[in-house]
Each structure stands twice: as C-alpha cells, then as structure tokens.
Image 1 (spheres, one colour):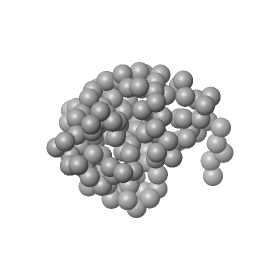
Image 2: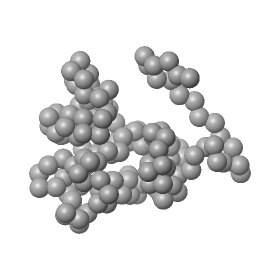
Image 3: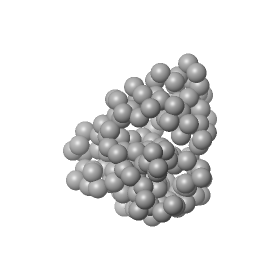
Image 4: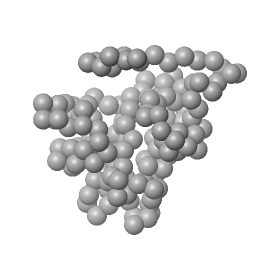
Length: 149
C-alpha cells in the first residue's frame, strides 16, 4: 500500500468498532475502556474537524482538531494503525489538517515524549517550547484523575 491508495474522508461518522480498533491498536486505552467507549463518538462529534484515512474500506488512521478558526488550531489526535505506520498515512492526515488551518496563527499539539514523534512533528515545523528563545512560551496542562509530577 502507498499513500496514493488511501482515501481521506472528512466527518465524524465512523463506526464505533472501527474507532475502538484504531485507538486500541496504538494503546490509547483511555478512550476505549468499556465505561468510556460511549464518549469516543461524542468526542469526534464535538471536534471542530475530523479527517480519517481508509484503505480498502478499513479505517487505518484519523486526525481530529479543535479550533476557533482564527487564532488557534489544536491537533487533538493523530493516530495510524501500527501496520500502516511509516507509509505516509500520518503525513497525509497532518498535511490535510495543516492545509485546512493554514490561515490560523497558532498550531498546537501535545504528544508523547519520544524521539520518533519529535522528529515527525519537527519535520512539519513544530518546535518544543523548551527550545524557543526568540518567542519564549510556556505550556500548562492538567489531566483529570492523574497526579502530575
């Protein structure tokens, strides 16, 4: 499979079983534990923008955004089935979102602290706030039910 064979679909009408399979495959269990499963379709519906990647009628990737469409675009989720990672699917999804929000001043995301993710997002011009000197920023986060240290 190559990225040219991937169909992108905009919208949140995705079967729950497909969503659970995708989120589970990348270990994002907070979305898929049985008591939280009803929240996943609602999270997509409440997102500003959802784009999904399909290959032969199988959901293989998804990106979703929150935005005021003026000053901030927040990439909430970007995930690709492990068997399709490294084949351009994530790049296709992120490019699609960045094109949709090209006019928005601030592009923000929060991601795991691993080298592969860092390299991927830096290839699109994202920078860790720890590395900013010309435009010093700070970021704060609270996670419900988690003691942060």
